[in-house]
Image (cartoon, rainbow, N blue to C red):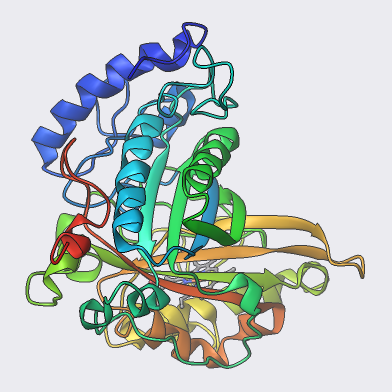
Length: 415
Ligand code: HEM
């Protein structure tokens, strides 16, 4: 396998850093850790450095690692019924992901190979930095009906129940597989999905995909909290990537949870939530703040002065979003939010087709998203939003080393 072009020094020189940091970081933390070229645990300002995030770890990167600025999320349906062929695809995807997250081109690169054959890599990320690219793979409920995997479907990988007010579009829902690509450079994220789709030609086909910008949650609470398209700080009370105990309690599947192949994994809920931006923009500031239970400027909970002051829920309106979503109102239910804003042009009636692409990770979706979303049935925010797409995935544990591959714990059992 040859290296990529010598005309991409910035990407290649960072690989050296990424490679060295990767080994150090993985050894130090025993899991997927983010690496800056200074070798420190990552700070969002590292976005500017274009650093690489370790691909190998106990858990997949892209969950507890710091949230990048951009998203390309894709779901795939499997078109092959040949299990060996599908397993080979997972191995090929892993090899490509290992290279792309380190800032390298896929396979033998984008040029310099056989003139008669298409190059291994599509080329648009040449010269770009790794940009903290993470690639996270998940398996949807429908995958388990294939390849004789019925018995391996986790109990927690339920068919999501219907929720009040949703209007789900089948063309933007479900999927046998998903790949979440996050990076600080949108071209790096799009390149990654495009190349995985290309490798999957004839075995999987993209079902739907979503581009996102402007992260709406952070896993680094010390950094400035991002704002969503409604103008409010979003992600103030989230699980931080450094909170090992809370991650263990609420995000990672444990030994006792089962099934065995999911230990170290998590469950991902993806919801495309449309925002009715125009009526929102005509809503008074007071009403907007009442709806969330936080003020717009500082992001402080009602009656408190600072964003990170503990919320006093009873001071909020009974239908305030934060009051209803808070763990104290949901028997302790806690999720790790990792969503992005989206704007897909206008809808034909001149309204902005925009909203929140909600992504949340949890140890058990029945105790996490389902519980909270049911409670949000009376949310005052519902007048301004609608869930229009939905999917749930079992996200397997991390790829441990260079010989490991995505999904090995599931597929190597009887293979
Ligand atoms: C477009 C839809 C949504 C918007 C604009 C939105 C916005 C917000 C904002 C501004 C906050 C306060 C800041 C923070 O702590 O993050 C918040 C908190 C929260 N939201 Fe949402 N949210 C949306 C949908 C959802 C959904 C679907 C869920 C889960 C089912 C959810 C769960 C939460 C949770 C758990 C909190 C933290 C509550 C706390 O601990 O204080 N949100 N949301």
